[in-house]
Length: 420
Ligand SMILES: [Zn+2]
Image (cartoon, rainbow, N blue to C red; front, side):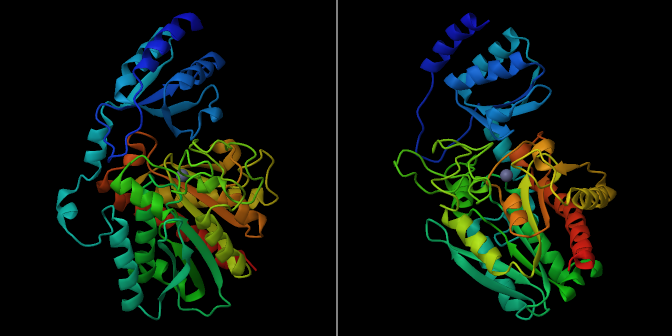
């Protein structure tokens, strides 16, 4: 089987281009969805990956591919044609999610009227500068409700602020929520901003939460990476710390937490998209968040991390298929939360323990939070299911955030009623 393929791959390899440092464009790049049916299909993609750069969107690494899974990955324009030939030659069913990725990137900013407005908006993707401005304005406008808490700086020196939202005292139960740990998942920071708005001026049943709960919300976890997706490479995922050998940039912050660190579903190879870092908490951003949570661990009753995409609500464990001691309760909560979410626009979410529902990963923040005693630990994978993937159009921000707010509020109310 592999002889014909090797010939093609040698040819394809000759066309490979080296990385460029200018702002990257994606004209002609394609995103494939491959419907893996057999072990042979999985082996073929692995073989391809040795020769062609495949940027995995889902799962987030080729190692997590198994038969009967859909694998989404991006291929550079000069190699896309060869990939389709190979897939056809080996009868692997596939569809093309993006025929020209740059068109998808441009189409993301689809509500032109809002896009033209210069200021911050809850229904558009805001640059980091706009988010900083928004953070400062909120703290000024609502001094009794919103406080900026400095938790440290990123590797490139940008300040990380947690927004403390609530008017209860420090003994109150608290919920920590972060967005944007993976830079290219833009809908995630958009959701954190939306949720803060709901807590301040949303409907009564959301606003009343802040009377008895404190929310710690980190609107963008991976700030340097987020800035990089705006200025240089829209498809960037990791943070921006250079590796010790200086050959590669970036650690996957969601593999850098101190829980079964760098064991399963992560890589010790600094160039990998799922590089776990030199040591657990080697990355300043992960360390800042972990330090903040450690110092508030008595009051923090729930940890919620927002990602995209694939429409899932996940809970521990990620690093093992074993069920968490609180599995039954977490499953019940997840079931209730996704049902609330679906009630608004009919959007379906699957739910379950991370390892078996999406794929196993070690060193992730939700498992770590659970391990330090935060029982109610959840990860959302927001819209969509891959049609637009990381390039969810701006016109979907509002509906996505509205429905997700209901799910988060459901968890918050449960935690308020049931945590000690
Ligand atoms: Zn993610």
